[in-house]
Image (cartoon, rainbow, N blue to C red; front, side, top):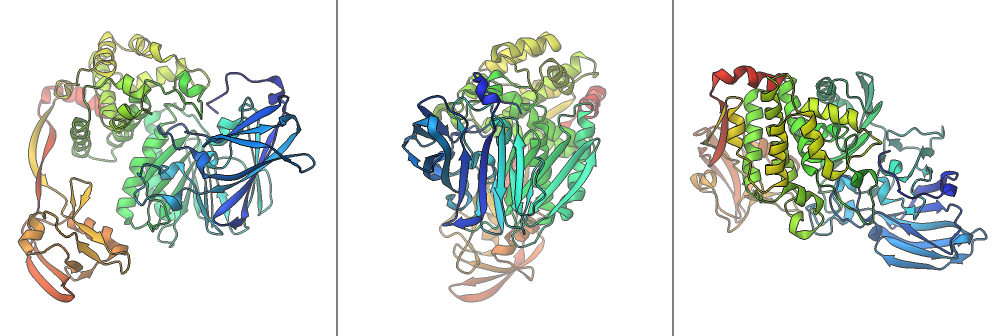
Length: 606
């Protein structure tokens, strides 16, 4: 509902574009899409599948998953079609155009195995076609638009097996068990409404006037919607309480797709926000505690997007161009403040202790230091699709969060604890809102007017400017101090990204990666590269429960007794010894100045 086309002909407003997705006849892992054309008055018309969509900040060229596009007149005769690029097709004799048809491939089964390959689509923005089992319908993967008809209403018809049910925030206007009909006011609204078809597994609950639906696809049945709903209800109730009077939608849907992580399944884990929904992709292998924690973090982030950019946004977003996108300067707000709120609300609503919140801030500071700390954030944001700046995108979640924190602290200090950044966002929401965008170059002045000159100076110096943020200066305002200390590191994963173990896909055995520099845990027990880990402390481990092994290792203490059964050169042996943990130096934040306690409490709990 946010995005609209700048120039619309009057005829477009009086028509409806009907698109049909056929999920009942999957052939060669493809589905057939039929789009009935609007009345065209030009000799040629261009049909486009998006190059990119809001919230992804990457050019994914969804048109490359479309094959065999054909155009027909009312008598069923073929019209000439010329492919202009990966995402665009020009249709000749368009005044006679009746419909187009094409086949769509899904993105999940051709990911490169990591979800972050050069040509991979981020899984929550992608699609899945698994006949009679699951269809992840991110609508931009299946349905495109005709030039100059983006504001035309769409009617989406989905033919599906009776055994599958479509979870979405849209309303099904057809009572049939094999046919769904949805209507949207324009193309952009259609794009913002994903649907997941699978065996019905969902729960619903209401939080302060908002109906929330949790839908789950778990291929092995390991998880159900009911099994994760208590934690989700607690979290979303806390979010609504934190936001207060802000209430952007009456229905919100969480679509959770759990991947079996096989070669032909999704590997890009995370979530993508929409005004009334979030698509989430995570590995099914995760244990319950880890899964619910991940859901808490990623869904809370996506949910807070209802504030920005879904309510507060620039013209670049309001008039989003799916095939020639112009990016806004303010990713520090869209992603950074959103991520900040996703952490702040948890301490604000007593879901986590202070120490946990400080550790999260310390982690953000450390990770931000690994990226370019002198790059203008506004310049990076506006050019994030270009290679020079693209590699710095992850900083929107690190430094972007910390920018939000510093602004929050400044406002708290200047208002004697009475107001914070949430108050600022509420004011911006009232000033602008869903249908009124701001000009990129005017936002800083508006924020300054709503807050204090010190906030404006901070934005000019540290967000638009290239001066690194002195985090210790701002943390000291609320009585916090930075230091470093040695803490236990992960036994099986180095620096969060490099594993010491691998899995044999033929037999699911876990083995130590050969020729790798092992940490003290392995060296102390005499474990070597190539050793197959069969059991630890009499618990058998293999690929299906590798997360259990990793989670168990996080609870080990220095000098704990341990038994590891291995297989070396085909022979089993039992190794007994003690745990020697690897250690790493980490940034530590703690409260040291009691004179700032009142302001600190206002910041965290106000």
